[in-house]
Length: 243
Image 1 (cartoon, rainbow, N blue to C red):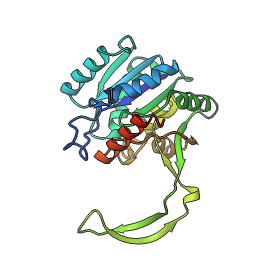
Image 2 (image 1 turned 90 degrees about the vertical axis):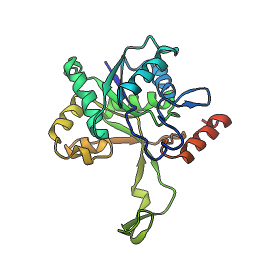
Image 3 (image 1 turned 135 degrees about the horizontal axis):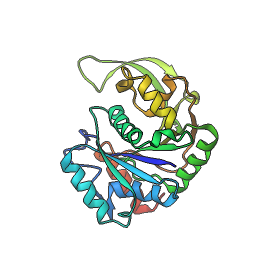
């Protein structure tokens, strides 16, 4: 049995002046949350969903959005998030452990940022197929810009000195959803209790425990809503049907 964890607890500090809550905001014709929920539901690969929320007020709004949607009959649980992204994921995994979900050694879990509303169901299915072979799979794309290592200017956060050129052919930009063997991911989180808050995604937590993570290139746009420019770009793609 497979589980979807949708992360909606992010503070969204860089877009707060424009959108109060990006997970609940209306994007074209529906809320941001429903784009991801719909894409995963259409695959019929997941028997339950865990939505990680920020606070009771947001939980109430998320529940109302789901209740008024075509997906109100899905099996959905709500878990309060933590201080960091890693803490939020761990709380969702711990919730699954309490319901004996972790005991199924063949179960998979998909972890997805609600702030990536353009994920496609057909690509999710391809990730799941590859995860059946390799256990742990993430979407990752080639880089098109030149990539530099820098030393930041201590007096400002938007400038600094270039110190090294990186070979972009060996680098990839990683996205969500990230799909893992549920039992092994939970074990990796437990093993890395002290350092997991510094990890920027779940793949890095598995890698730190010695697991191998594979990747699959995503040929479709899958931007994350972080700034108003991201919002405008996603809205443009939706209006152009460029998905």
